[in-house]
Structure formats: structure tokens, C-alpha cells
Length: 212
Ligand SMILES: NC(=O)c1ccc[n+]([C@@H]2O[C@H](COP(=O)([O-])OP(=O)(O)OC[C@H]3O[C@@H](n4cnc5c(N)ncnc54)[C@H](O)[C@@H]3O)[C@@H](O)[C@H]2O)c1
Image (cartoon, rainbow, N blue to C red; front, side, top):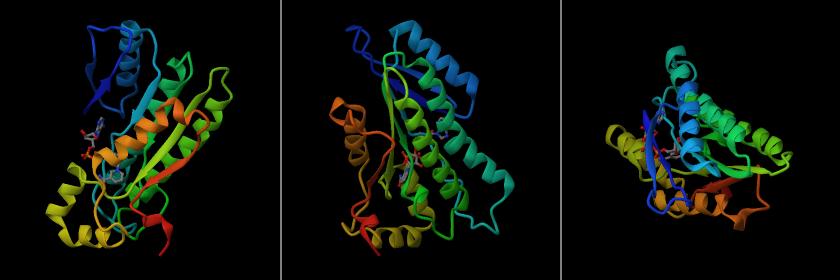
């Protein structure tokens, strides 16, 4: 369970609201959008960032149960968010899905994570094509972070430091990203400066995707 951050412009006294949301639960999403529409009258931006790694199992050792849990959050959760945002963005809007480099480049491990992020990435493109057909277009883009200094990376580093050391070595800029590196890209993509950009993959990866 996580928290959604809502930032209205209309009400000077009400800068933001928090609401609990399990992204894998469709009723929760409907409730969130109902609340937003009731309180603010419109939805303009959605950032789908909730995600879990579900461990690092390879395809032979992954369990069906763990596979399902990872897909529930990463693939189903982001799909539900986009689905219900689309229905509520009456004035057009912008959506960003926080995918992962793992959604474009596979490794022998973390098969469920990689596959779920691949699903999220392609869902983004399909949604972008659909959103572009609307009279007031809804732009949908994917940000693909490389390893970033958040709870997720700190957790893996504590358990498997050698895995994260290898990740670091793959990044030409020789350090992990900071959360604000992703926030800066997201802020750009949801702004009018990005008004002609939709359906794209935006790799914030310290050069990792540039070559071998
Ligand atoms: N940190 C990285 O290195 C990295 C790299 C690539 C992609 N990403 C992606 O970035 C996004 C953000 O990850 P992070 O690094 O901040 O990880 P994090 O573990 O620090 O945060 C993930 C958040 O998702 C929330 N969450 C999990 N399941 C949820 C659910 N069912 N409903 C609502 N919220 C739920 C958690 O409560 C947590 O706040 C994720 O989608 C992740 O896959 C992270």
C-alpha cells in the first residue's frame, strides 16, 4: 500500500492531499479518482511509480506465486492507473509510467520484474496511441531509470552488495542515479515543454544504454 500525491492549482488553501492506494486494486483506483474529481473537478497528470522487484529469481526458479505478485503491482497496477486516468482526463493530460531499464534490456535474473516492466512499457505505447486519438490528447510516456538510490536499491545493496557493485560497473557515469534525476525527467514530460512527446522511452541511465 502506498500514498498518492495530489497537487491542485485551483484551491490556494488546499495545496495537496494524500490518499492510500493499493495500485493492484481497481476499486481503490476508482475511489481515488472519484475523490479527486469531487474535490478538484479535473485530473491533469498521473505518475505511476509504485513497483516491486519481487526478488531476483531466474526463469527456472521463479514461482508462479511470486510472478503473480510482481505482475499485480508493476503491470496490472500501472494499467489500472492509466485506464482510470484516461476516463477522467476530460481536458487532456499527461501520464508518465516509471518503468525500468529492465523493461528494455533483460538479464538472466529477476525474470518477473523484467517481464512485468516490459509489459508496462508496451502498455505505455498502446495507451499513447489511444490517448493521441482523443479530441483533447492525453500524452503517455515511459521513464526507464537505471539503478537509483531509493529504498529499492538500498534493500538489494544490503542483501547482495556484489549484485549492485556489478550494476554500478555497467553505468558509464560510475554512480547510481538520484531520485531527483527521475523527478526532473518526469517534471519535463508532464509539462507543456513536452507537448509533442508521447509514446516514448526516456532512459535516465548515466549512459548505460549507449553501448556495450
Ligand atoms: N530504484 C531503482 O533502482 C529503480 C530502477 C528502475 C526502475 N525503478 C522503478 O521506479 C519505481 C519506484 O521505485 P523506487 O526505487 O522508488 O522503489 P521503492 O521500493 O523505494 O518504492 C516503491 C514504492 O512502491 C510502493 N508500492 C509497492 N506496492 C504497492 C502497491 N500495491 N500499491 C501502491 N504502492 C505500492 C511502495 O510502498 C513504495 O513506496 C518502481 O516502479 C521501480 O520499479 C526503480
